[in-house]
Length: 209
Image (cartoon, helix red, strand yellow):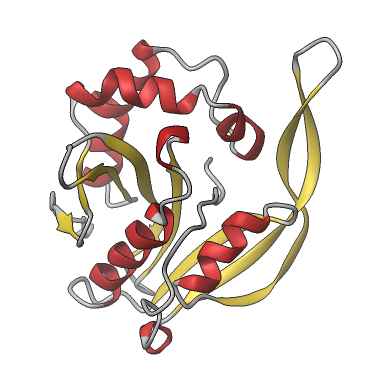
C-alpha cells in the first residue's frame, strides 16, 4: 500500500504552512511570474491564473494521493498573505526520503521566510513523519539558495555536473536556457541539532521541476 502525506498545517512563530486552496490563485500566479522565479526554476513563463488553478485543484492533490509528495502554501501568521510555496517531491517511502524545494514571493524576500519554512517542514518530516533523509538541489550559481541550505543544517554532498537548466534574459527580452551544475544537499535527523539558531535574512530558490 502506498504511503501518503497527511493534509496538515505547520505553524512557526511567523508563518503557517497549509494546503494550497483556490483563494491562493491570484497571488500564486503573480509570484510565479517573477523574474527570479523564471531565472532559477522550470516554472513555465508567463504563468497564468488558469495554470495556478490547475496546480492547486488537480496536480497538488494527485501528487499527495499518489504518495509522491506534498505542496504547501507558506503564509504570514498575522496577515494570512501568501509569501511562498514549499514542495515535497520524489518521495520514496521504502527508504523514507523526499526532495524539498521552495519559492519565496518577491514581496516577502529578505525576511528569512525561506529558512523558517524549510526548517519547520524538515522538523516535521524527520520528526513526526519519521523520514530519514531530505534532499535539496541548488543551482551552482544560486548563492542565496545555498545559504538557506546551510542555515537549516544541510550537508553538501557533491556536484551533479551539467545536470540542470537555468534561464537568462537575452537582448530581445526572451528567456534562453543555460546549462549549469546542481549542488546536492542532504538533511538527516542528526543534522537538525542547532539548525534554528541563525535563521535570518536570506531567501533563495531550490530546484523546482
